[in-house]
Amino acid sequence: MSVLSVLMLLFLGSTNPTRAARLLEVLYEWKDVEFTFSSQSARDVLIKTRAYIPGNSYPLDVDSWQQGTGEDQVFVTIPRFSPGVPATLTTVVRSEEGRQLLSPYPDWSWHREGSCDGITSVFRIQVDQCGRLWVLDSGVVNIFSQRKRICQPQVLVFNLKNKKLLLRYRIPDSVLRDHSILATIVADILDANGKCRESFAYIADVTGFGLIVVDAHREKSWRVVSNYFFPYPLNGHFDINNAQFDLMDGVLGLGLSPPQNDKKKDKTLYFHSLASVRESWVSTAVLRNESNFQDNVNAVPQEFYVSQGTRPSQSAPSAMDGEGAALFFNVLSKNSLNCWNPRLPYNENNIVELDRDDVKFQFASGLKVIRDRSGKEWVWALTSRFQNLMVNNVNHDEVNYRILRAPVAELVKGTSCAARTSASYVSVTQNAPKPGYTPIVFA
Image (cartoon, rainbow, N blue to C red; front, side):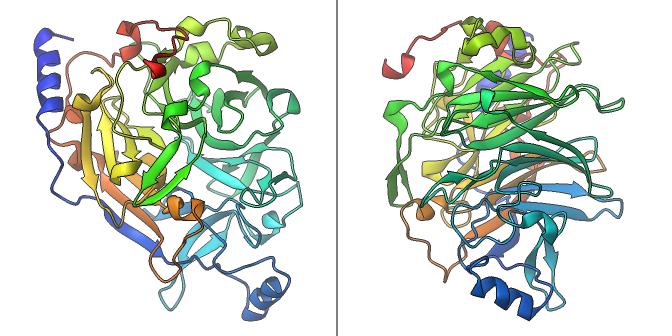
């Protein structure tokens, strides 16, 4: 990258104030979600048996797949945080009356709580470029009352064209902790232009403070350890729209870069803990090498990086655009959508606020960059007002859940996240210092 290119990036990153335009469009919104029951009597039976408790279903993540018709099939996850969630993986449908309902995916038979041959409790999902849906099933229910793992955590992969299950991989106890909750999944397809067989998944264990790598083709997995997967003690207190709580959650946000330079397989995985204001990263070549992490030891700590700078407050999910110029994330205390160009140092001068809304963008718990069939990229977000759930103050008389989207090009226009150069994608990893396990959080 030329000196002029770097200067342009620095200029764009430091002179862009809060964006005045409200670019995020609300596609769907709910006070409480409702489901597509086969009949009113079926709904009544589920309520009577407390298999369905209206108001206890809290959406968390979103993804979308553009069907051959050009219509978006929108997926919404609803973890079984509390009793009475009838379906944990759903699609958005409209009733004849125009109501926005959630329909269980693939169908109702997969959502019988306690049936480990189905789906138990899904936190997050990802649609890959091969037309497949990756589902991360935590196997854990009732997180806010009497947390219990009732089924083995698993990764399921569905063919979106016919709903056929392509893979069920149950994650073994050897890579879990007793208190593990698997919260985020990112799929890494190494041969997307071929048969889509060489696929990996990187999974965040938010309470076990680790990363799990799943080799989907060989159907095996291993655990990755790093001090950067832990919560940062100084960042465990949250203040979001006057809701205050403490939560010492570890690694949660995962964002995968495009291939680095001329290497078709190696990418950079960006990650951060929920209780953190720093960003970290590691090459996927390091993660895919199981020998680096034998016997629960990280043999290559020098290959893991952490930013010297910080963002304004904690962040939850993240996602990267297809050019590698914008890592999108939310800043929880500001109800904002932000981006950072990895070609620049990670600090508040280079973190761009793209949009902010104190009503509609409270706690984005789901975030994706989705490319449609025309090649246009969109940022999709699901906002859940999760902070109100944490303090037991959900107001069911107001809108709590929204799905929003905006075109990437319009969001980043005129910012450092839109900068393009003739140089190939260059990960900041290559020029970053190697802090190893230096506890700079206490500096």
